[in-house]
Image 1: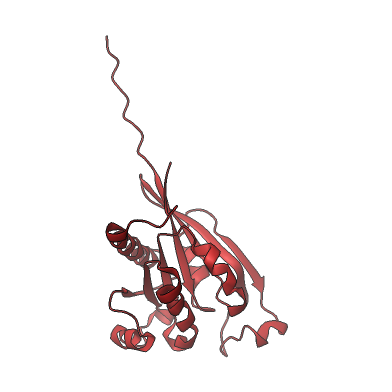
Image 2: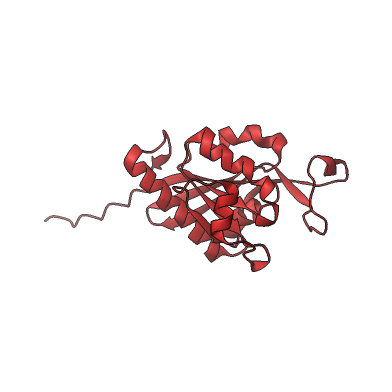
Length: 203
């Protein structure tokens, strides 16, 4: 008598996504809104001493800043788990970005159109230094799109191949849609060039 064979468990693939951007654009909020585990936030209190190097706009309620990285995890379905790595935004911690991007399949660059100047370095980094597929997302602070996306694309001098979208980092559904755009864009790029070494890990 032959015993019925049990179905084989699905092959689970994990992938790394980087959440990047300038100082105070919403990276920690984005990771926290999506993570199914308590997110790891390496934050430090902002003090009067740090105002000279981490200036914030008048009236901002920001009291902490990321000094290493944010980390979270989200399960997409039975076969895909994404690990989210948020970069620190301050220039003095940019040396960490190369390590955080190693092995990633793609990146989401958050921008604040009220302070586009802090977004140029992040966009330039992914356009010129990594070769990593990336998507730019305008974070809707106060739930408002302050400028048309076409104007933002021109201001950031984005290549036509780089997707430009909107999201609200506070909203889980909105953040999930932005993350889906990153995964789709990364997979399309990998279809033509293959994944970066170590980007997809089956287990």
